[in-house]
Image (cartoon, rainbow, N blue to C red):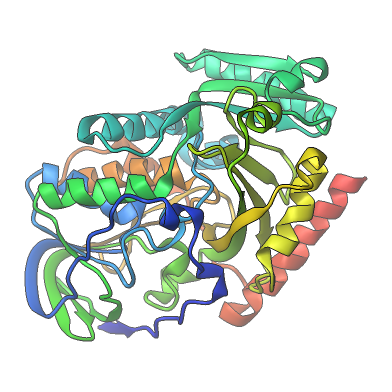
Length: 437
């Protein structure tokens, strides 16, 4: 049995990001040529693939990792850089499938995921500007009520980091805007330079013996007791395959690609702000995010640029001018930045699942093929958790976490590859209209 895929041509949304311009030196990893043999072949050079490779190598397995472009080229190297607790959205909905205890374990894993990132940065001394402090922003009173429930739940889970509810009159201590009616501070979440994290993890994987290949897009997979993964100039034979492509899976495996919807998200980066400007917009240098369907998320970079993102698009069509599209959104929040220049604009695809829970499991008809995808905006931390759970399952270790995620069914988006994005765009428009009521 085999599958073929046509790799897409990068579009304007993959213009150079601020992260690419400010990253660590990025070494060139070779193109795969000829045949390699390994215990595990990992497809995808983002956080999912890199962390699975690290976890497997630490357990003594030989690993080959294939990346179609460069390490961190996709969402892992161009996201908002927000490291936020939790996996999934509304985990209580899964109680009928995994039980109340299973839901609690997933919530605890959502806290563990951030700790995995913390430990990886510390162990491998990755210079990725990791900064602690995050605040959820309430757009309306009901959001603040939800934050109070979140804070109580964190206490019940034994969360060890400081949390604090803010009322409207306290919001200027966190964000220099009048748009918000309250917030929830979480000192166990924060922000970082995501591409530098990916590059640091690639170096760690290589140090552990992982063989990394770039510009090595997969053209065909032969499934069986031993998989054979083909690229244009080479192939990998392995006992086990891991697909960690997320929104960039395309047609590589139709069963999986039908369960994840690529959605565009966009970011602009200002010129460096003065100390006074930076202090005025984000006095405590926290990452923040509001609660709307078309959410805004923003933070300061290490060199005091405002990185302002959001405007998640399900239509499959990107703005012609990202800066022109995003700048008015930024100015609604911070009109005081009207004279500030935009130095960088970029976008990329995140993977959305119908139930907003990361999809971590193995193929039913191909039990030696594992996957992780559809992080729905929580990818920086959830990818690191996924790597740990996949490695545990592949190595035959008891993994209650893997079993819980694999139990949850995931719907295939209707309409096929051409209609699923427009149909979901209509659905999201309905949710946005509800916010106005």
